[in-house]
Length: 95
Image 1 (cartoon, one colour):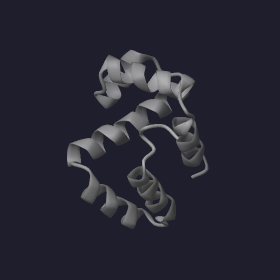
Image 2 (cartoon, one colour; image 1 turned 45 degrees about the horizontal axis):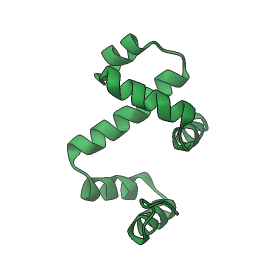
Image 3 (cartoon, rainbow, N blue to C red; image 1 turned 90 degrees about the horizontal axis):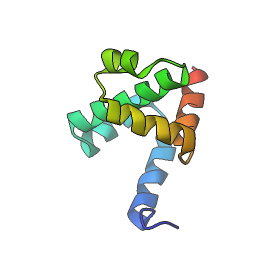
Image 4 (cartoon, rainbow, N blue to C red; image 1 turned 120 degrees about the vertical axis):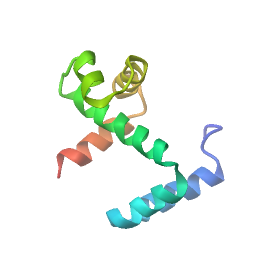
């Protein structure tokens, strides 16, 4: 277990896995994060989606307002990370 995967993180993971509807999930996000954090996090997911679709950085920057640094970080995580973005994109593609 990494240093990040503490008992508190395990509790958060358990809660996230058990949330079954978007209203409850949204309420949890509102309580846990600032409005800015929610917007930035959801923007990163949008960036991952666009990168996966092959959009160039400039188009992603213009459409999302994300910086080139953020886009590069998302790209690195999407291609070489733990697979979280890929799992999220797979979930979204099933909608």
